[in-house]
Image (cartoon, rainbow, N blue to C red; front, side):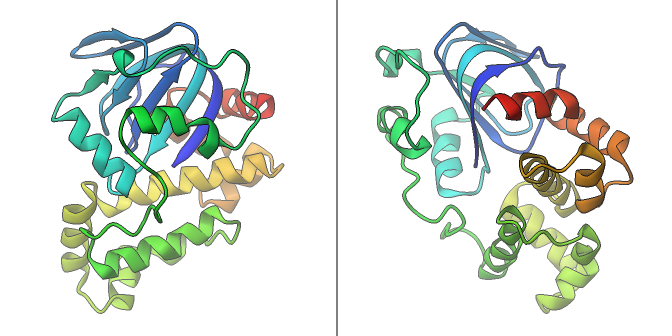
Length: 236
């Protein structure tokens, strides 16, 4: 789960693997092929959309973690679901406490929790859980080059054929291995930039050819350029 507070920049239409939870303080607007909605929103995974937000919280949640599964149930096959009626007045000032404490009213209103290990989902095959745990090392600062994550190599380590691994991963996670890995590499690039690396350094650290390659992929996934993202992170 990636949590940010602030304004959503003017974004292009984009789609990503995560379910997006928007808790707005100011005005918000979401456009997608199915229509238009405003206020507090849950945006399903892989829904192409454009979001404008004056100020508030944005949570990007992996669909197969415990929180993601609960949000998927709330969405009930809809693409975008408003939940304005569930919350009272927003916080008056920019919150300074930990995100878990500040987001407690939101999660309580939605009757969901993030108390458990986000990868300890009982519906996942243990081999997939083991793989996700290894990938999480990337987000904790011990980033591993994407070359170490070829499907054939991962399958061999899990004692499966490559075709069996690809099928199992896609079935369990709702996304193919290659685009999922791309999603995780972008998460690593964000972490690298927040640690002070330049866009070029972050690109090389996470296996992109150069900063232009990283920026194109980033824009397609998040709707903003890598430079806009750096400015956003600097303001947090």
